[in-house]
Image (cartoon, one colour):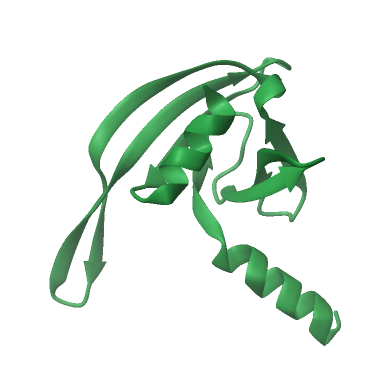
Length: 115
C-alpha cells in the first residue's frame, strides 16, 4: 500500500457520515456521500473495503424509524448524546438497511437520495 492509497483511505473514512446495519451489511459498514454519473449517491463501505453504491433509483422504499438521540458516547468522565435520524431503506435488490445518520446537512443529502 503506497502513500496515495493511504491518503485515499484516510479521506474516505474521514467523510463517513453514518453507519449501516441490517443482516445484509456487516457490523462496521459506513456511509459515504458520493456522486454517480452526476447524480447524488451514497456508498456503503463494508469492513472488507468492498463498496455498495445506492442511488435514488435503487431505493424501493424508505421510512424514518427514529429521530432525536440516536447514540450516547462516553468521552472520559463525560457522557454526550448524539442527535440524528435512523432510516429503514429497502432496496430494489431486496436488501434492507438501517441507516444511522447524525444531524446536519448530511440529512438533507441522504433524504434527497432515499425519498
